[in-house]
Amino acid sequence: MGKWGVFYSSVTGNTKMIAEKIAATVGEAEVLPVEEMPEDLSAYEVVALGYWLRLGGPDPKMMQYLPRVKHATVILFETHGTDPGSEHAVTAYARAAYLMGEGCQILGTFGCQGRINPALLEKRKDAAPDDPHGGAEAKERWQRAASHPDENDLAAAAEFTAQMQRKLLLHRKYMERKEKHL
Ligand SMILES: Cc1cc2nc3c(=O)[nH]c(=O)nc-3n(C[C@H](O)[C@H](O)[C@H](O)COP(=O)(O)O)c2cc1C
Image 1: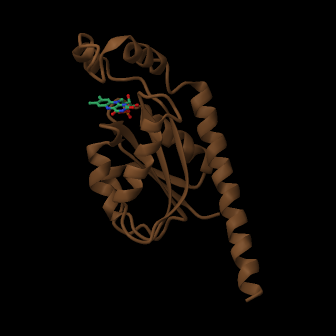
Image 2 (image 1 turned 60 degrees about the vertical axis):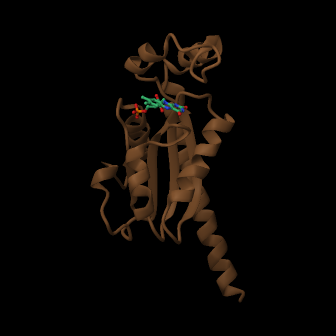
């Protein structure tokens, strides 16, 4: 298996935690903040890109770097205040993918909740019930996010990484067989 490059954007550390778990599971991986991502990504078998959600999409820093990722096998991972698997979380993958440069292949995606910056919650605490960030439902969601990423999220990130390694191997074998029979 070749080396992975794991590049992340993280303000309060949630996404960084997942990035480090992915890199530790791979073993042969470089894990760096996205602003230190090399121009030339050809040394990496997989480029894993991690961001936090803002306005239902990748955060502004990651948005700047996504177009530079070209001709790579990519994993997208995200942390968010919203519930995992929610429409909001899933649409964010599409928004990230849309911004990537040409020739990329998406191997897989991973997401989990991440504790929301308390300073932001303080600002939103009196939001009106008809504001998307107001009302009891939003407050319950913040509470659900508050303990994440937790041990289960880290274990899921490790399992996801192992699954991606298997997927890559299977894909490679499949392509080799296909070429032989052409
Ligand atoms: C300004 C701001 C905007 C956010 N917007 C969203 C959002 O649109 N959707 C969402 O699910 N979470 C949102 N969040 C929550 C973060 O994405 C989440 O807490 C994330 O885990 C933070 O990652 P980090 O610790 O790596 O910085 C927002 C957080 C902040 C501070």
